[in-house]
Length: 296
Image 1 (tube, rainbow, N blue to C red):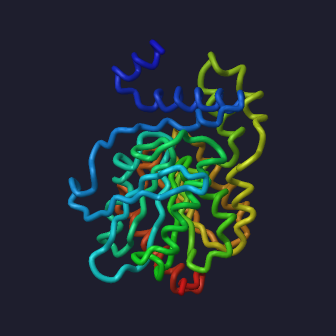
Image 2 (image 1 turned 90 degrees about the vertical axis):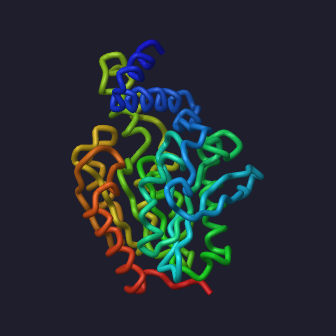
Image 3 (image 1 turned 30 degrees about the horizontal axis):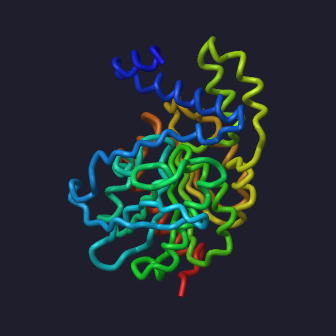
């Protein structure tokens, strides 16, 4: 704890992330998947402070857990709707910067806070967070604002990893056009072992952590996604999730995919104009290629 406090004072975000991940996967080893998630309850900002129109929504997961989400509409006719699944820390009020630009490009965005994050109730854990993603998908499929729109899912870090497994349950969804994965890992055991190797204190844990069970592993979800197009991003500079996971995930997907090698910090992808351009071209191409069949 003293080490973590010292790092916080020094502002060393990389080391903080490593410690957070190590604590997370130590929790996994003991069977407590809730330690995968580091939610923050306090909103740092709201969309209107960024000049964005929005709706504050309450969704209900299948187990009755109330969830909070923000819906960012477009002005005029939307080109599609995007479900955004953020990383394992903070909440939608900080992760919004990755997608705040999309409404101006014609795409509506639903930002979901998993249970325990922001204003969402409950405590995050696997597999219950998949119920949260299901609730968001149900809303997008049936809400008047989005029911007639092509649907995409964009995930970053653990959000991408959750998405790749969860989406294997949505392959029959006629509105789903494509997935966008930014900095996903392959297996929970693999990323746990990688994090353990970063410090001599945790080095002995790398082997037992790497043996963690394979339930909900992203790479297994990818292999079940069939013809759903996937745009894969990963930064060569990513010091949190190894870059070599990118090719493993691409190889596991039997359908059409696009591999994009980026640079810069973990999940800073859409701070760069070129990566935004690639995403918009991918969305447009997926909608026009017959990859999705608009819901009626």
